[in-house]
Length: 316
Image 1: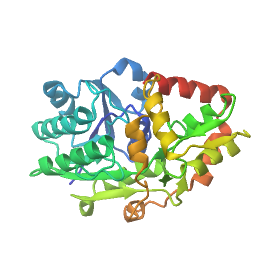
Image 2: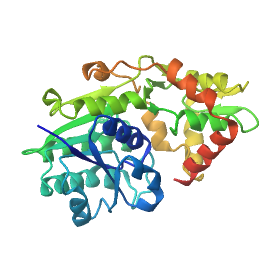
Image 3: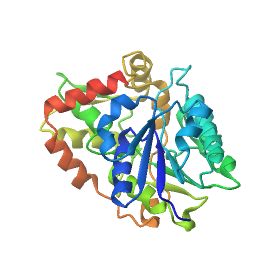
Image 4: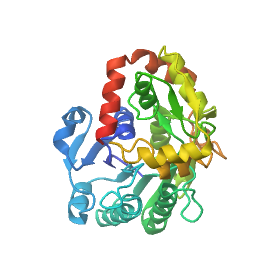
């Protein structure tokens, strides 16, 4: 299988930007498919940017024409129950993507799933819908298209909405009431995720496989927040909320702009986001420690940048 041109559906996002540059450096031609091309003029230096509605089968098929492979990266953390429901974004959209890939005669699909994705036993609507979408990608991809899916834990990096969110919260006066402080996560570096996708692209041994992607260390949520506080120079009082208060906080914050914490987020955190197998190593990637990469970008990010990051997150 020889691949030259790759379409990235959702390639204008956090992971997509890093992956596009990684693929371009390896000599691939990249095409980013986005609903709002005018917002991403900066990406035209590294990729062709094509505007298309991924839910419009005709538009999406036309945008995929001439490509050999596709990377599907679109996903949401919160549902509005309507146009951006978990089922619509994680299941129905996958069906559209696979159908369009077949129509455009693509031979390869890399699919972004999530750690603990399980359509029958997931602890949240998010994880159940991710699991159903992942299964649809693999089932509908056959015959004629090789599918590989990736299940990362929470992804961190210089422009993430995870560590930067907590870094921005450090600037708000007063203590930080922290829900689910004992939730377990194994944050994975965005550069490692991009490397895993790129390594799998033309490797036949990865066809039909599903890879869990985690960083080398596991942390509780409280440990991660204290890590951010320490490396941004803040002495922050962190209040550990008991389970009932965590659920109460989620029931209130779901109505705030950007939905910073919802009951479904709470349900997701009830399942430890740690890997049972080392997918990064299996794909030839040496996991990057958060103590190295995380410290570097947290030290470089000033307060204004972190506040801007929080404003952008709240507007999504």
